[in-house]
Image (cartoon, rainbow, N blue to C red; front, side):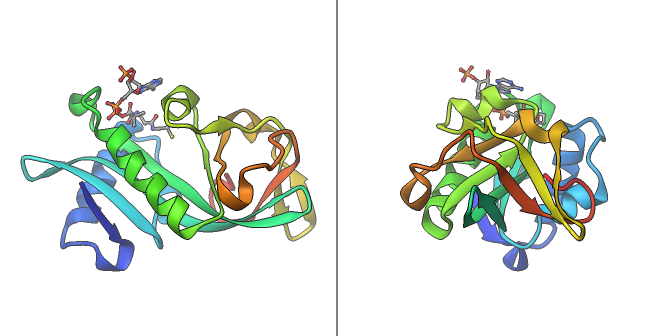
Length: 174
Ligand SMILES: CC(C)(COP(=O)(O)OP(=O)(O)OC[C@H]1O[C@@H](n2cnc3c(N)ncnc32)[C@H](O)[C@@H]1OP(=O)(O)O)[C@@H](O)C(=O)NCCC(=O)NCCS
């Protein structure tokens, strides 16, 4: 497993990781989605000198109820289809969780496969989700189902049924 910051990425590795993630999502992974995965830390699984899995974590300020938390937001988690079920995705997420616990106050992500993360201690958000847009907080009801958090330390006792919001960004907000 290679763990590195975006700016320290070994030559060619991010290109390989992006190709794996685009393939993992059957091409349903946009340029904005990849941009969201940059600017923080990456965990990349290598097998026989090629990338087989990727996950990254970036800083986002999330508001939970009336608190603002520096969240490690997980992006671009994917394993090449031929290499699934071998633990690469799990090992990448274990590295990402270590970084989240070290550098951030809360972990967060949006997913269609919550079962994969629940095994690793992530919990489903139960409260309403919002985006902080130019016109003020706006509901993102379509995202309610997929938001998960990793609580610890400063966030250990946050209420999973509270409101949660992220800042607006290009592409998908969550
Ligand atoms: C989800 C994904 C990253 C898992 O990668 P992986 O390298 O196969 O994961 P692992 O080998 O570490 O899997 C470990 C466990 O997770 C479970 N798991 C894997 N994918 C799962 C899924 N889609 N739903 C539920 N559980 C899943 C496996 O059953 C396995 O459990 P087991 O060890 O008890 O048998 C991979 O299936 C993938 O790239 N999927 C498409 C993209 C995607 O959905 N990304 C994540 C959501 S944002």
